[in-house]
Image (cartoon, rainbow, N blue to C red; front, side):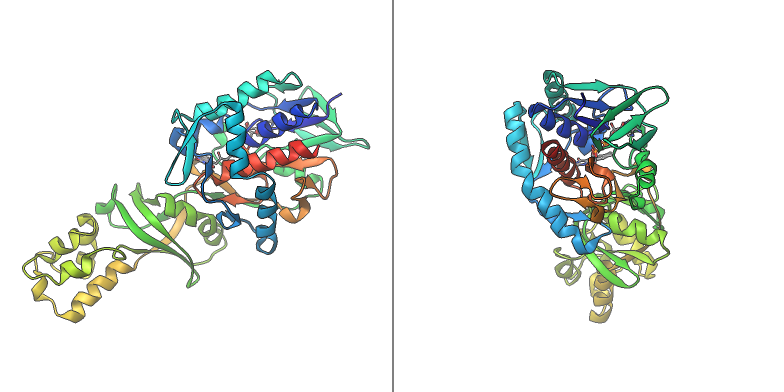
Length: 398
Ligand SMILES: Cc1cc2nc3c(=O)[nH]c(=O)nc-3n(C[C@H](O)[C@H](O)[C@H](O)COP(=O)(O)OP(=O)(O)OC[C@H]3O[C@@H](n4cnc5c(N)ncnc54)[C@H](O)[C@@H]3O)c2cc1C
């Protein structure tokens, strides 16, 4: 008899299967691909940043703002960063931490994936069915029947861990939203998250990478500021601060709101000192703190000759120049689609899930874990931690 069917063999599905099997449960994983954890291989630029030193509900976003913090806190208090590190210690995987971000010591994402697969292979009560493309979930009196074109599996407990819609080439193409909706769940519209934002900017900036303070403004209201490197890449704004902002920016663009990224290239620089030094060209002076391509592009916009020297400007104009570089605004006119996104914003409404068990309140015996749930972590290992935490909770709950 099967105790738990896990649909989707990603991080969440694998952790749930391992945890349940260790408690003597018979588990079957139904996986669309011919391998487990395909997405893990492309995480963290191939290095897999699996958790973060700094962990709290503030690193997570959701549509359900009223209950998000308590929901996430319940989950990460049950199984958080330290629990994950202890688990990896027990599994014998080595890791290191850089600037708060945790990676496998090998610096290879495959190590994290293989550590989980090795454990699954070691546990006799987990069976993996590969190349199984789940097509329907049917509720019966005693549980659920899951089917593809040819084979059906039945169990009292089912975990849907089929991921969101990001990077669909890895297998997670949002298939389960439809079945979950048919079973009565509210699915909040999925949007690409942790993705690039499209804006018009001078061609001369292509390829430029600049440290700055980057604010997101939606309909005139500043909703957050991130510090880090902004990258001007193929007509898009990119880099970790942009990814973080994309979680809120993409739904706002899609719902017709005015979305602006405002970049402060001046904060924490010595540009003010340089612009007041005598005998420097204005471009030279500013370029001691800001990338020269950025300096020249925006001086040109103000019709200021880059050849003029600092003493040729009065204090008012110098102040105007500094103000220009402290708030360069880019209107967001699009975003990277799911193919280029690292996560999904939206999914199963968290008000329909019990965070103590990750069981659906609509369908007893049906559990949800990982990216399919309407919780999106920021860059920094928060999504893999989320998939891990929710997967372990399900494994314990069944
Ligand atoms: C490029 C990139 C980089 C990333 N980097 C990081 C990072 O460094 N740190 C971090 O924390 N997060 C990162 N993420 C996000 C993170 O990888 C995901 O949030 C996390 O892996 C989600 O885990 P999951 O188990 O919920 O879903 P997934 O890993 O997506 O697993 C879902 C599984 O379900 C299977 N499946 C889907 N549909 C079906 C079906 N119909 N039938 C059967 N099986 C099905 C899929 O094949 C897949 O194996 C990154 C994502 C991307 C795309």
